[in-house]
Length: 286
Image (cartoon, rainbow, N blue to C red; front, side, top):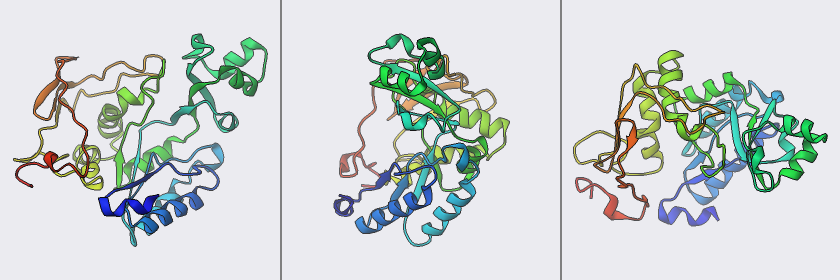
């Protein structure tokens, strides 16, 4: 399927087959698909899962860097030690904690830990997972040092990922970008403010070939977030994951105010950006 991308300038963005013990083989598979399709590769949400793989980002980033010498590769990540997807029993053993985000047969369990649910029901976590299906979950299975190492890698884009319709979703939907700017940039000093902003904007626009996006210059699209670098911080938590960030003054989308004074303005000026839509190229570049 990747072979149809090249004529359209497409990008092969991949969720790896394995992010645990066999991650190097999964990376090689992803790179091979990109080469076969003659398409740039994006390793989506790069991470190492499970205690046995904690610390291996040193190895995977070196592997990615070596592959970058022979083909176009990028990667993204989010600034949390927990991921979220559908409820999967194979994640139970490798997770230090599992938090249910939604359950169709048991909606009252959203926001509760799987082990607490299992204890209350008097069953194993695996049996509880079966009873909760279909369901979603947050898995605490990454290491902070790996998260920081991947974030700091010069080719890493920042992305939020997420399942917005879960009853109690992952806080990354509301907290990713202010968390990077406030915690990892200002408090931890992982990188300079300019680099943090570039990882969220210009670097992403370049890798996904979006002309006129991700830059502040005459003729570009006016997509602008105005924030206080000394105050910006994520306020979304595991218990209150949709809490808005602090320190954001206003957000402009395609030249229209979308957020100001702590609330949405009601302006819906966003648009789908397609590589083949020449109408979305700034006049100065068309």
